[in-house]
Amino acid sequence: MTDVETVDLYLQNRLLATLSRDERKRLLPKLKPVTLNFAEVLYEAGAPITHLYFATTAVVSTLAVIDQGVKVETSLIGNEGVLGVSVFLGVHLAANEAIVQSAGTALVVSATDIDDEFKRVGPLHDAILRYTHVLLTQVTQTATCNRHHTLEERLSRWLLMMGDRVESNTLALTEEFLSWMLGVGHTLAGSTAISMHDAGIIEYGSGRLVILDRKKLEQSACGCHRLLKAHFDRLLAA
Image 1 (spheres, one colour):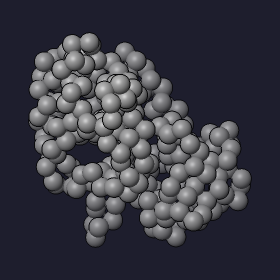
Image 2 (image 1 turned 90 degrees about the horizontal axis):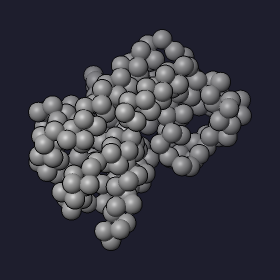
Image 3 (image 1 turned 120 degrees about the vertical axis):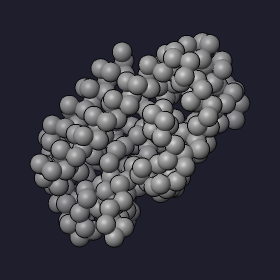
């Protein structure tokens, strides 16, 4: 990939796009464009974090692993942020598994290189701190949503969040991924998607999901997506 193409990718990530000219000059040679494949595992829970990923078109899910290998999604990371923020807090071990939810591109950088830039306390430092707050807000809101809202409201909220991060209305989505996102068994997760399919909101089957009616999806969702998006936009634009 040429330098020009790398710069184009660089500007697609909202965090990297905030950097000053000097930061960009130092960091750009250390960023490597990569293609991330659907269901690719980027971090194993408890494993060392050697590289961070600035998503451009890909979307990554973080998954908490609980009793007997059951997994529950805790956050979504797309072109608004970076995977591996614990490095900036001095923690170089992954707390959760990270898996590619939507295939696409990203820029990868070594944990040492990006931490060195962070410690210069320039625009990247400030943007990372704001994003860390935003990510913690997402995790907190997701936990609240999972406790208080219906499965259909939660699935609708998640699909809207995915829609904010990818250009296509068609998503690769297995029943296993769906159960992780909703934090329920395969049967209940599948029946929720089928109910929305029957209502004409989505098309679901054969390992894919298509958003058919964005307006109906917004009506079906709880208010968590709207609150999170407003908070993200406000802080990341600061």
